[in-house]
Amino acid sequence: MTSTTIKVIKPHSERSFAEDLADIWAHRELLMVLVRREISVRYRQAVVGLLWVVLQPLLTTVIFTTVFVVFVRIPVQEQSYPLFAFAGIAVWQYFNRVVAEGGGSLVANSALITKVSFPRLIIPLVSPLAAALDALIAILVLVIIAKLVGAHVSWTVFFAPLVIVVVGLFGYAIALWVAPMNAVYRDVGIALPSIMQVLMYMSPIVYPASLVPERIRWLYELNPIAVMVNTMRWVVLGTNAPSLIGIGMFGALTVLLLWGGSELFRRMEGNLIDRI
Image 1: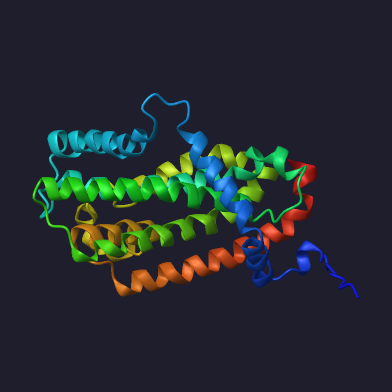
Image 2: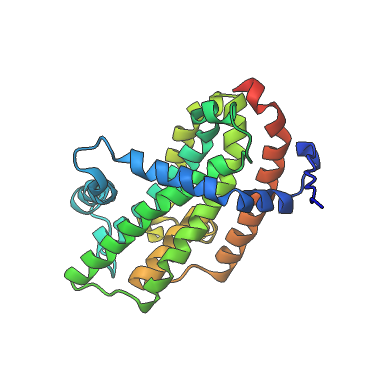
């Protein structure tokens, strides 16, 4: 007697978030193949290769240190400004890459999407996983530099990988909104770099929140990007922890963006192949 497997295919609009997660898990081997491909090709043609993982935040830190410490002369912080800036830049560059590459992932992988049947939610998930390795290396370099210059490194540094996971999840939630919208309306992809640049300068990534007027500082620190960078500084350098209200709002916003993004992605998924 032979067993028969019945596969039920539902319209995209009738699928639930739990079914989407189950589909991603069932295709986890394909996801890992795409992640390994992304990691292997990113620095293949580069002369210094993987060294760019460190050079990118390091060179950016040197530029902002020159501007804010030498020219602007911002008030001296308790911790070293280069370490303060490096921690913020490492988190921002990871988040920016997850949103930018995840948002453009459906268009970039149009040849794969139009020829092979698999859960499309996997495509924007490749960037958070592939870029997480770069972020982890950058934070490891930050810890080594901090120890070399005699700066304080908190015992909570062991939670740094968890912070990277949370940042990647938040970026993936945003990419779920951006990717299908960009596939249909290319204006989204054109405008995205400018929007991300504005968000960067509105967040305490390369300058301390103490420079913001005190009457709006509480609102400023509820900014989810501020919560992300301040959490990384807290776990690595032992600076002030973000407020519990900020962390709570960040968690609630991440859940809402994930739920709403998956709903939007599911509704637009059926027409993507015709529009890409």
